[in-house]
Length: 251
Image (cartoon, rainbow, N blue to C red; front, side, top):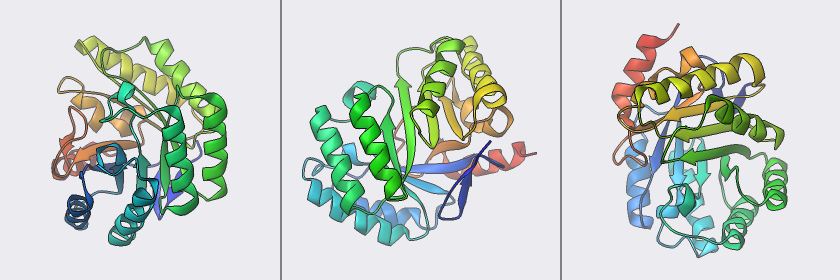
């Protein structure tokens, strides 16, 4: 499997890397949160820009990306606008989504960019091409907050992300039973052993799926989301505990 290295952080080998969300609503909150993350034991930071109250002002987003990058210095930043249909904070049209991404790729300061699997294919490919030209890595993702698809469907979606030229392929699903958690783990293992030629990131959400956030090294998930202050998704483990558990499970 090919690994992906960003600012000295290598995804796809060793223990899963810990990523922590930035969910501030304004510049003051974001700067305070970013400073709070400096001593926190995490490997990457995800800026959930859909929480930012000036998100529709692309230039404000660009300027904020520079300030966040300056504070976090050597921590890679994943820039994410999570759409409403995949659990995000606000509704954006496709035009707004890709307009924001185009502006941030060209003028902002980011290391990785989150792109959702089920967006307009032509615009997705243009966005990926533009990002790669700037050395920005693509995390392609899909979320199901209601259920856990079949093992075959999970594997199929991750394979589609590879075919679309994502650098990292990510899926998050909601379990309704312990069997659903096993389905996600089985799909992850099958993807890792039979199909994946680049890092994958998987998780079963909520309290029920929490074990999946800790067992990535065993089953093949390269990154796990921890909470430093406020969790951005159900089931995120506090970052200090998460590192201890990952080290205990390392082999």
